[in-house]
Length: 133
Image (cartoon, rainbow, N blue to C red):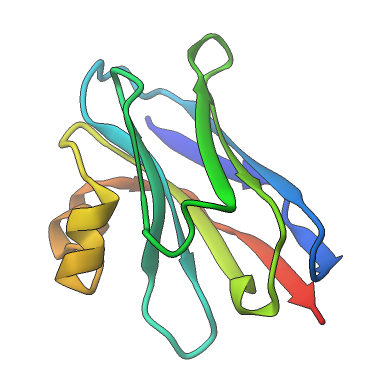
């Protein structure tokens, strides 16, 4: 059984940093993508960053300069380093994994997270990030 569990969220001041972690267990695919998504209150879930099994990364264009995705395969852990946080970064952050590759620019152009990924991907329960000004 696949299980994803996020951690590292919290409340910070604008300009500070956070590193989110996602511990992934039971996921045996050696293909596809893993990534981070976020959802602010009253808004749709949006893509943040993704990393393919070969290590290539993609980002939402507006976040690329401040956020960095990485993965430690030996620890089965996905990370998201978030720097220079802004109040508009506030939201619930989710990690996801899918044996079907996904790319953040494609998701950004689509304007929403694909239903196929929402239904067939593996998702964590989320970790809250709150950035105050």
